[in-house]
Length: 262
Ligand code: DC
Image (cartoon, rainbow, N blue to C red):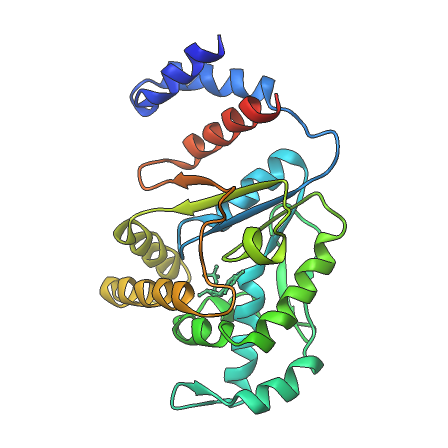
């Protein structure tokens, strides 16, 4: 039965709704709810839909979703707001001095749907998604003292297990022993288009080329940095979602869980 399921799944599911519904039901019935809570690391390139996918998994399993990129973004916004950037470069000494005084948290602290991001108690969820923050977040997140600060927060939140955390180095550095690691990728053009729509929805007016350049620049910086670069953990499962709908991704996840843990 399972072989048949896989065979069908490899055919383009989108073209046959009946078949898709059957597969979805079959996989949903067979998804194994882990006996013990585990850590699921979702890493990958910018704008691959990591957070939507991680949230969907968290909701499916009743886990808490944690967006690690939001912490780097909140720190970047803090640095911009406090005039710590001079001609595009952050004043590292000043940031290192001020960072321990910054409190970054989620409200509510545990939610599968994602939470508001608070910096010193103020909701900065919208501001951290602006292009101004996206432009400078990668060089800032390459700084080892910033990474140590963030890793400390993430590892503390992970102690409770039962979490789905997305980022760039979750499966390689933050939780190298995570029980399940997924690495997401998609073509740069598909990713730029997704980000473009997201920013438009937030009332910004970016150009598609600007976004494409920004995400390629960020991918490059994230992969080339010496401290905790973006890379696929050897034990991660790769998910290329260039051609997948969110429903197909969830089916992929449920099948994969049924295959490995069922
Ligand atoms: O996932 P995102 O695009 O919101 O992340 C913003 C930036 O933060 C990204 O350019 C790289 C950095 N980041 C990181 O270095 N390590 C993580 N675990 C998460 C994000």
